[in-house]
Length: 144
Image (cartoon, rainbow, N blue to C red; front, side):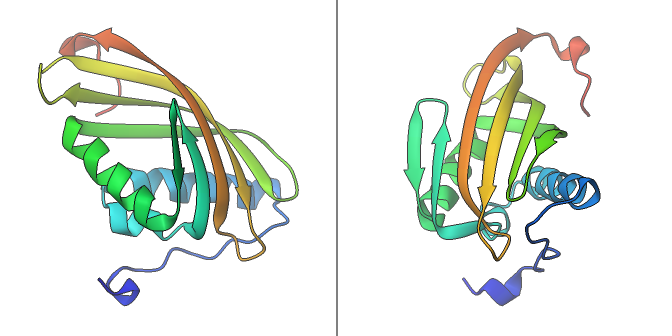
């Protein structure tokens, strides 16, 4: 699939300021809420390295596969990211998202943290994520 098919996100490169760090976080939130693995993967370097809970993922193609599988299992996914801190080429966020488990129909809220490191082109080369899932009732959802 051609990269040209997807609108390229605004290029924000290090060093980050408060304004550009917030903008980078918002762009990431918007992309993930699209639930489009090909679009989301464009924010990551070709050889990006992820730790996602207990999974270690390397490369843009593996990221696309991971996200495709994720959003099949996590129905009605809705995410909110919050800037926690930033430095020259790193950003840390806290996040929460809500989703419904495909197999059981159980609603979940996931809380976590991510640490991002960017290359000189503004692509994320490292993503380190930790999270916890909490069972909720549909009536307890706050992200819609």
